[in-house]
Image 1 (cartoon, helix red, strand yellow):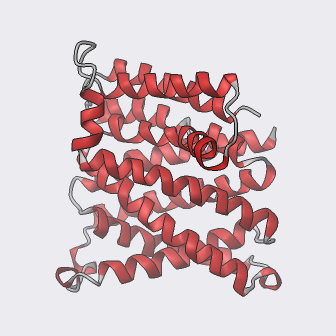
Image 2 (image 1 turned 135 degrees about the vertical axis):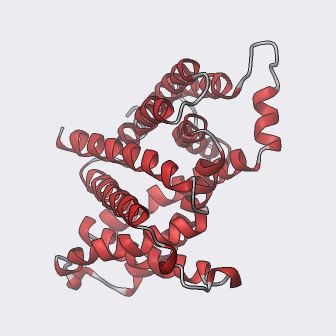
Length: 292
């Protein structure tokens, strides 16, 4: 059960990072924040490079890791944009829908059958999502309209697809391509920093000295978020190396429960009791779908 406690640690660190991210995003754009965080992440990740077994590093696994990093950058920007513009108790719970997306795509694209527990899990996911986004029971189409009309909800849906692909690549890199959790963490943060720098400085209005905009309080928060981010990413890949992606994600996704309850209280989100109830339904659905 070592993997379980590692995955649970990842969950708690992830929830803490999300709450801190929401606070910083009040004053910074998602891209600017993501760029600054990526740079600080790389600085804090430098010790990992001294523990890397370079004999296991090759063009193949680094190339796949670079592609995974591209996907991760896009997913992170989507989540940060949604987190800045939506209540934390509305944005984060939707990330727990990943298992449902995987199950549905496997059914339609790969012809895989759905077990009874998986069907029940999908129903629970749909119910939880409906309760989370609904205003009241009379407006039955309101949640659907939210996803159609709100670009920030669409960002979350895109992030779900990207995170699903990224998680599968994690397992491939760790198990099939002999990349250790330390190597994956180190080089992923290097690629993240490079990619976010390219994107950030591609916009003309971002080329002025961004470091000059730093306030001491900003630096403290971003440093804290960086440590939490490196912590939850490393513990996630470490758990995946010990157990299945499905089991790890099932435990990791409990982060949305902690973030919804604690973050919702801190930021005074509306209808928090209803949203907590919805999150429990969503997590139940995820657990049923991911059940081995």
